[in-house]
Image (cartoon, rainbow, N blue to C red; front, side):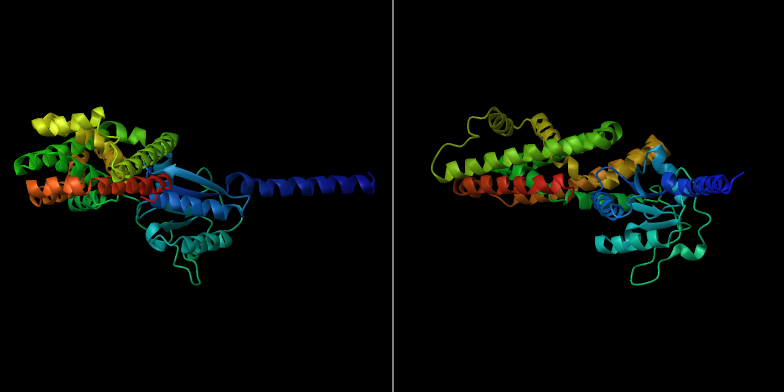
Length: 380
């Protein structure tokens, strides 16, 4: 055999060996992000990870819903903890509390984890990263530690009833509440001003919101907030809010110039005014149920966690959590609506209606325009 033939065979063997060594790195390398639909913190983390991995062509980002089969598998295999978002880089994990919303710190932590991770580590479908030494569980330097995966796992069943209620209470004070309060103020100003009518309107209006959220929670919300459907709903709601905001601002301009209101001859305005004038409790309830759709994107990721609890722990215990959460959501509406109702006499209501009608339209329109980009970019 000639020397050139031996050299060719040796080169071919070395090339084959190199390809075999590089194959695991090319096919299995990934950073895992466990999130939940509607989670704004998760969306921010995903944007940061995508920006980082643009500098690492061989590393892929795998995003899993915490309540999907793949998400639960990722939580078990990487031993993730601390809620969502949760990030795994090889055998290392990063919880939200490790960077507390500081995206620059998250970037430093992930880049350090990628630099410290040995070549050839695999993601969810490959090895568990057991070859990584335990001493790699933290990253030295100015960044906060990235704890080893042996810490407590993501667990929604540890939520106490008080925690769930407080989470709902905080969600009730979301900026989206401004839209509901603007509607309540308009409805109350258009009413007779009798205290009993105002209280009943607020009560049944809030009850309509409560029932709508509860029905979503036990039946539809998980489906409506999944994957691409959530993106389409968010886009549609953003367009609707912009359109309604512009209409309200135009109406304010007309009223300020002494013109007729765009809403004066509206069938919906006549329906609201007629329902309030006749004291139809069913109408208050339906108005609350319909208006709750404006606030639907603001319920937060805890709502999804409670739905996951229903599916994993059974209907009875999950339904109790969902009940408490929804009570927390509507409590601010009841309190603020009651303050408005008890703080306005009929004379003040009529005077306020005449003197500030254009201002109410303008504030409502500006609020809707402000909410539109915040919802689209998942800031709220």
